[in-house]
Image 1 (cartoon, rainbow, N blue to C red):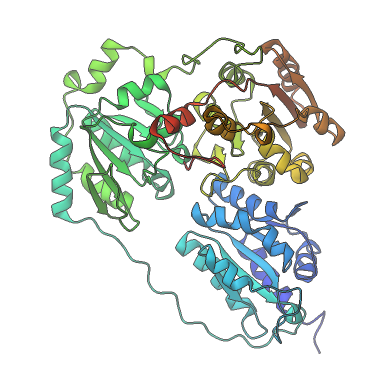
Image 2 (tube, one colour; image 1 turned 180 degrees about the vertical axis):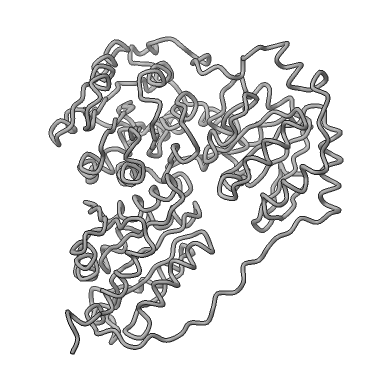
Length: 560
């Protein structure tokens, strides 16, 4: 005689989720009610979104903040399509997660159903379907596949099978062995020869250096060469060397760009070198030789001279053995420190430090630079997409790469900030979550403003409010297009936050940052919302570079 209820498709999936996922983010509907109930009834950690876009966005941000996989869940139909933008972002950003969705009945589609599998395929996401014969093994496969391919995987539950009794599980064919891309000795010798001959070498680390635990050999290689370092935004602070020039691309500081452009040889490790990352072709000098290594297939790139495919850590370790230490008295570092002591380490807003813009509103550079000293050092910085987003990576430091989160940039989306920030709060509750948004994206994502307040132990919302869609304003109004649709009636996000239970104030001067500073000094839990009236007239550096290059960035949003 069996004790307790018999296992079903939903409870079997829930069992694997409880074993494999660090957290479940979701919104309940007809297609996933039994799954969610099975998990919450046993006390598994679950955060409910207020809009399905936030289910995937929170799971995405959770992974970026921790490196641990999370799961998301929506119902079928509209629940699935509401999460589609976030799903596309996670696929393009190569974020492993499992999205469990309801689906059409196994007996055939209803009038309310769509072909979700084909829709997922359109953004490159694979769908696995659960059944009584495979629910356990297929859920395990979904997690294995997500981690193996470093991308999201969908697990679909046909509506009529959600409560079907579990049957004996079939055996799935094992996944193929993971390909190891080993460095070729001839390639290693070739690159080592180039690096040894370099007078001003620079090493640029991307997110793959972090993911492959390769920061140590990467930094050791740079030290032997007497090289400067840069990182992608996703690898922020992965290299702790004092010779780190900071973030490459559109978020680079103007005074560090001058040094980067002096490099004669650049080794790029596990960074995409997309147009934003190489600053539309202006990050390095025209004669700089660029060598890129990655474990991804080669794609044509006008600014990469040589590409080598290899696993990052093994490649760097093998290359390190071919590089003897450089004479420190005759290196780029030595000469740079003599000429410009600590110039490239400055965190001050040297680009434009004045408080007010000509229109009388606050200069965002001065505001964000001031926040560097006001906000707690142990923080996670989360950003929405928008024109405003350049200033935080330029002026706000973070403890490690997992503390700089930009969900939406891979798909060039706005409105996923409030959706993703609660995932960071859940992932790293010991840190203060600092969420920075513009007014356009902030208004788009308001549904999960409440989720952020509910899920965050201690957080700060900074709304850099220019009363406009800034990216469109700077690109198209400047060319004579009618700005009517580019402007937004000014909204006070601090007032909205107060209505939802947060503290906050509106800032029109730097002195108005004082209430935030006083609130933080009390060291109490909760969320503070600071709405900052910034100028429409100041163009962020990444967009200035784009406009100079004649590149369209409509609907924003640089890819880090």
